[in-house]
Image 1 (cartoon, rainbow, N blue to C red):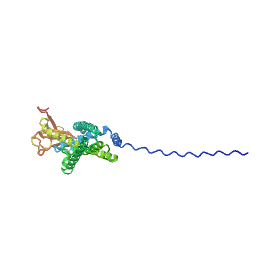
Image 2: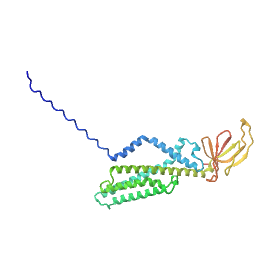
Image 3: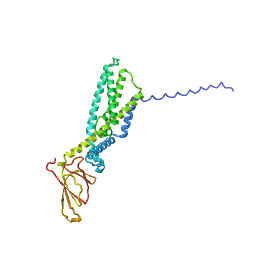
Image 4: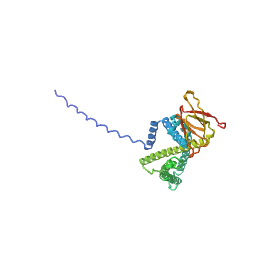
Length: 320
């Protein structure tokens, strides 16, 4: 028995072509995404705490350096430094918010100029002049920052000036001017990768400049607090110190008197000193000055707590 011809098998279907690669992410969203991931990694609370500690440390260091006291000797805790930082952070925060409002107004004006000149297509339009102006201002600010960094010396790190602000806003102004010029002529002046890298550098320099300026402001604030402390020393309570051993090299305005021994508990205080004012009590030590204290002339006396001294406080009638 012969069968009919077997049916031919159909050839297997060709494999499906590989899916095309996914298009790359938009370059415009790369920078915000990275900044967003960085902010999520740091955390707002962690960043705020670190800034408060840093500003408090700088302000405290400048305040007591005015009296010749290193901040390491004060024994201030992190909580104390945070409280000191809260006093400093209000002014920079207010300046930043006002600056953001000003930048929003400038950007709104720029968009209005660009929309008005959208149909002109003339490189001599107001938008082009605006772009040239931003680039020129940015170049001048960058030059001012370089002069402040390399010519003025290390004093710019502790004197509030224009160097950090120039460093913060100079590159940003140049980048903004380049962006305006590209919008005005209808196509970007730089490639997307080069523009993205330039924006990231401008943002980084802006953050560094603002942080530098905030540090200078914290130092100036702390030094101002030290000068204010000197003016108000006469209103602080008088510190009367009784000691077993005499104190050498007394500051101007301190009076010494001899006391008799009381013999109780084996303690004998033989010397009494009047005229001190309490600058600070921290870390188991008393930091004492006089109402007539002057920078460069008088010293700050540091006495440790212990059985060798006895302290009394006398309020002043004109105290606040």
